[in-house]
Length: 194
Image (tube, rainbow, N blue to C red; front, side):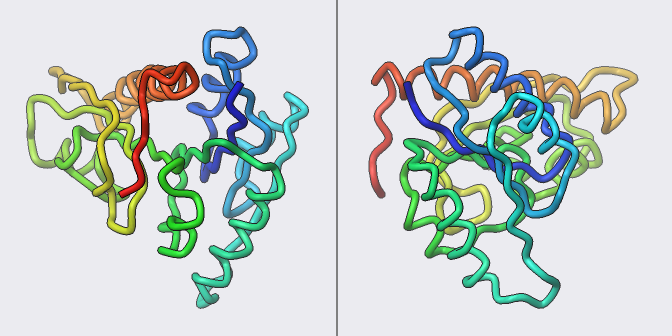
């Protein structure tokens, strides 16, 4: 069973799906902690499931490297095998990446390298593409530039809004993340240090 720490920045819908899949045994992992950069609604789900939850905020104008070190220390207290950034909207500093790489994963709502960054769904929608996608990557020092572990296309359909498109992408993100973590736990996917 992999020990997993999940970092979130919002509602935690992907977190809920992941925790549920761990609980029902479909993913051989256990979420040992959930962290966030502010007291976001998604932390309540962790608390409801008796999963330790913590907040490590980066104050406006604060030292990002010092914040990354504090965040890393909080995570290390739980001795995880894997750290997942699931909708975590902060760019983590290079020292943080080095500390947890290569077992530091990110879900992204686009078919990378298309539409990197925090507005991926909006950017795809505004570009007028007929399909976008979802990806799971290993985090590196760039913005959504790490090795791709899994990805799948998601069509943009007539009548879509940014919101409805994002809802469909989230479903695929959850499936991809579950598959990747399952494969890592079963040693069917090996993640190499870059």
